[in-house]
Image (tube, rainbow, N blue to C red; front, side, top):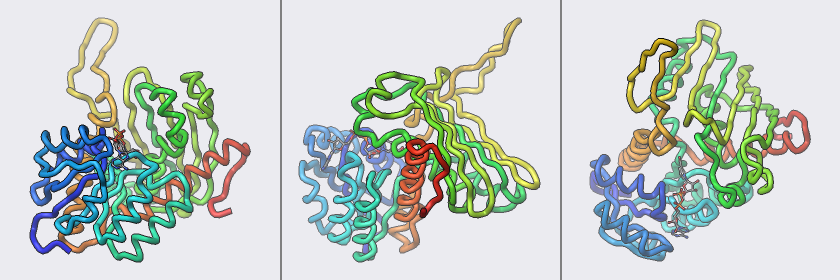
Length: 338
Ligand SMILES: NC(=O)c1ccc[n+]([C@@H]2O[C@H](COP(=O)([O-])OP(=O)(O)OC[C@H]3O[C@@H](n4cnc5c(N)ncnc54)[C@H](O)[C@@H]3O)[C@@H](O)[C@H]2O)c1
């Protein structure tokens, strides 16, 4: 347990998202610091250390877990490493922030969560969108009854362009890789659990994605325990840019959000009114949410308070992703827990 008001962190994985977290800690999270960064690519670790005021760069993550100075670790390495790193960090008595997803396999996920429980450490999963100002406000509107009882929800989540086929091949598929954020958002916004899933999916964007055995376009219908219905709409390509919106209809009104734009300019001409495209992709659109989720983790550990996104929250969307994939495969409604 930390005994001072600054949390000492070790970062494992200095790639795209690890660097985002390192920068936030260095510049925007005053009560935490990164003492060690580990990456199997030692040059990447060193670059991260140089740029973001980290004391040590190492190749082997065990040096992070063995250090008595480290209170908590941020697991930002490739997905297939998360579950075993969670287990080892828990055994070393470190609190854990782990990027999504925990793993693609529920048995592996459960072993990791059991290790966390046995060690009594905190585990927060990186569902950053919960910390986005738009979605947090929609959650509050629903939780505080501003729209009455929620009845219908539509989550739109479309990427600007598909990733390369090599990425798709190891991604776990659209439901685990992309829609996992939206499954989490659906549970978060409605504050209820999903009971049934029906999914339709197609390969309409890029034939290479179909050849890699995945889909790039999907509509999933969810039924919730509280009676509400939801639709999640995912595409790997919206030609006008990153499209991230939600609308919830309730018995006393509705709530909805629009995309975020780099500016509010409208260009007014004789035939049409135009504006610039939405913020390009997740690094731009969700930038502030990455800071806010990490600040919440740091504060939870320092204050001995519960983390806002738990291991169970990390597990639930994996169950839904599996159910959606099964629904497509078998062409039927899948009951959760069947
Ligand atoms: N929450 C989000 O919005 C979000 C966004 C991007 C990525 N992610 C997740 O973060 C994880 C990393 O994604 P990324 O885009 O940063 O990938 P990346 O490939 O850019 O970075 C991963 C880094 O981990 C390192 N690494 C791999 N195995 C390691 C090990 N055993 N020990 C130490 N370092 C190791 C690699 O060398 C690489 O530098 C993935 O699980 C991804 O799903 C989440």
